[in-house]
Image (cartoon, rainbow, N blue to C red; front, side):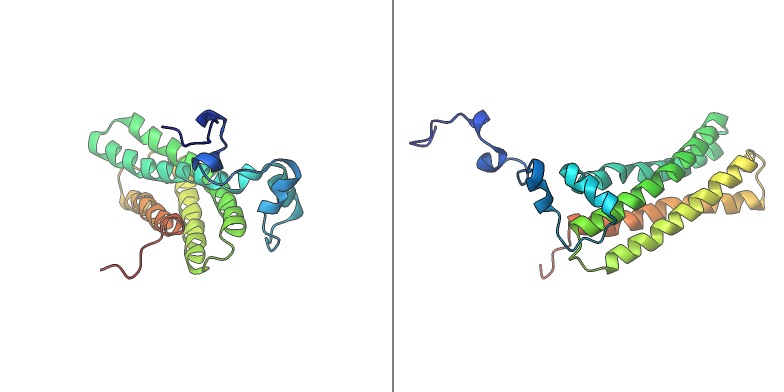
Length: 195
């Protein structure tokens, strides 16, 4: 039932009036006001953010899932190959590892931009942990990718170096879990003081 005096249809109301969605997104010159003045980003990035204000929120949450899934998949398909002997699983693991190496730097860049734009006032400890483990994730996944490229039979002819390679692969899911946990704390903080 409509409220008295309200003759507008629901689909003609703005998101802020219907309480649907998040804050209204400004257009044109007003968009610049959503970028805090204390943001420490190079001018080319600021120009892009002023022109496309939706980039302030969406790029990092969008791209962050790719390296997580690819790192998990590389370890999973490697284990699946070792369990079944089906060579296509080994090939898939290699492709996933390569995709992880390609997407981790993009995720790191968008994460840093998101930290400066959206979380400038947050405590820096979680960001330091994320940054440290992201660099380690990039280094280990790059080493594993190059190693597998140079020695395609690293898991096929199992030896002690195969075990080292496999341990590197199994470290990747641990790292993405740690990074995801601390990143998730920014969006979903732990409640303090609950009994």
